[in-house]
Length: 85
Image (cartoon, rainbow, N blue to C red; front, side):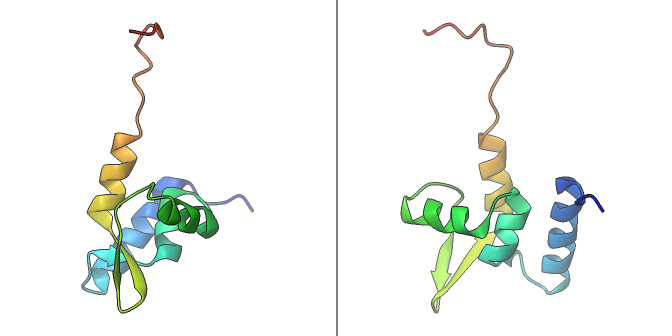
C-alpha cells in the first residue's frame, strides 16, 4: 500500500493538533509534517537549521505556523535564468 501524500499527512496532523486545543506539535509529528526523518530534524536542531522550535520542560515543540513559514521559505524561483548575479 503506497504512503499517503504529504498534503494528507499535513492535514491530519493539523486536524489532530487543533482538535487537542493546541497550535503546536511534537518533534515526531513535525518530522512527518515536513516529510523527513525525526533524526534529521534532531540534527537540524543541533545545527540551528530548520524551523523554529521551543523547548518547554525538556519537550521540543513546533508551532504549525512556524512549520508552514519555514516550508514557504524553502521555495526556489525556477524562473530565474540561473545566472550568478
